[in-house]
Image (cartoon, rainbow, N blue to C red; front, side, top):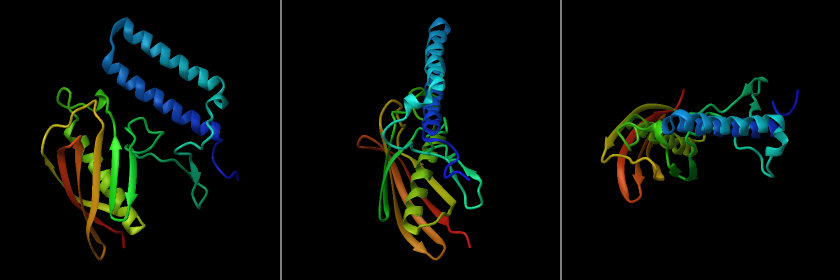
Length: 202
């Protein structure tokens, strides 16, 4: 069995294609008529050029999310809808983890995440907070756990088109239970707060 399921060039191609799809999704909500056709044609041409010669995309560094083999030999691909560079739904976080604290930046987020005009959909606020709080719990424990409860308090609308900061902290560990809290900010404005409980498997 090969060491990896695909070549580095193909992993880079997959992430490049995901980026094209993200831009297309945004363009579908930004353009109409002939402008939309021109936009889609240009993005399609970029993808076709990469398909014709994937090696031209290969950077000096490794791709962010190359597939790997599990211990049983199954192909494992990161499908996370927040962090995966191959999942076109993912806005992609830049995250720093230290001890019991995580700080992530994301955005600016495009219109496919919009709820009210110019604002981030409230449900996606919860997605971002759940991800960062789960990450800090995982970092603290060293193993996965399951979100049992996640309580959100919305303080103010979250604007699109601005970089956001999401912070999470572990506040208490009680046996299999880990408690965490955090907030999502736009600049210095706290837009939402969260607190939750994560339970480790038996």
